[in-house]
Image (cartoon, rainbow, N blue to C red):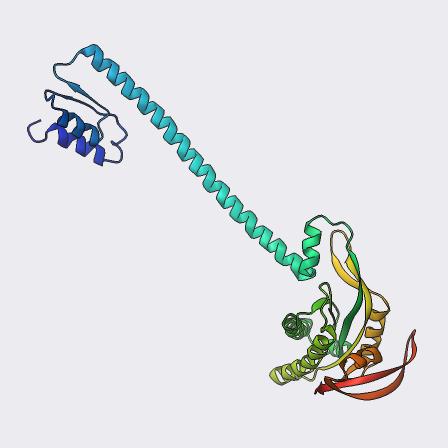
Length: 307
């Protein structure tokens, strides 16, 4: 090797990615310990001094090749393991994304505490609440409007209104129960009880009127809303198996619905029970006694503003 010495050959082999795994046995006339150490440090598999014994050389070659085969198997195993781990991470990431989608979908139809109970395996979820406030709202004349406007535009406008109400519901930490056509139902005080549920719903109702007026200005429309709410006990729970629905039952729900249906366009009507809890913080006017189906004559009040 007139142009390279043994050290340089070894260095070149070990610097090459493809040649690097090949085991190298150094054979040299040098017997200094420094030379042996240098070769080993540079990556030589073994070192043999000249003159060498052919049997010993063959044994060293066999041992080196056996170690290489072991390292190759180990490397192949590690590469396979890394590949499997990468696939597993990808699958775990996909699973996490799907779980997040399912979680988001579940939270769109159920309150989080209820969704958590359902995921823990509860089969029947039904709770009794001694006092909550239930609100109903309805767009006045929407049925007539639906016959004069294109379906896509109708749904678009309705969606704009309900999305705005959803933001208000989240802002006031209330629970949207459902929408039925152009009706919107929410409740305060469940599934997590709170002492200010009546006041929170009252603030929500006032902001719903403001929101409708703002949307009318933006889209040059003339939507009118009727709102009613009532305070009292309810039973809340999940119905359905494949399609879950979190709903409320009880006389309170019926009275709240009547407060809305027997209310006035652009106004908020409440029951006597609700008025008594809010009269010190909000401005009301007494509407007087009206006939409520199933309840007879009831004194109701119109909520005007905060004090």
